[in-house]
Image 1 (cartoon, one colour):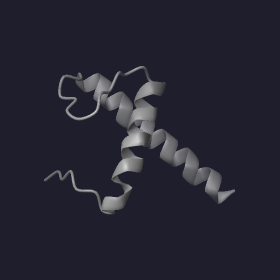
Image 2 (cartoon, helix red, strand yellow):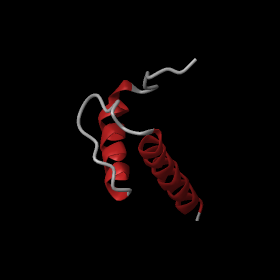
Image 3 (cartoon, rainbow, N blue to C red):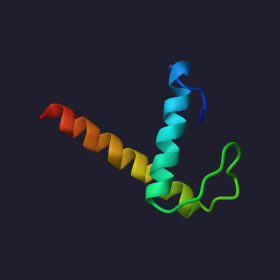
Image 4 (tube, rainbow, N blue to C red):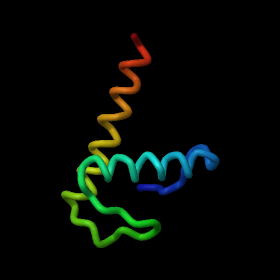
Length: 63
């Protein structure tokens, strides 16, 4: 079952900024609030970009 709860509520604003930044990088136009009009491809590209950036940050932290 999917949940939209943030583990650390104080991090929600940072996660939203991160999501907007990732969307901008892949050319998806997100708006504040509901974005249910996105295609699966658009939503997937935003999520994929977020994961890519998180992996890069982790790998850079290992160096």
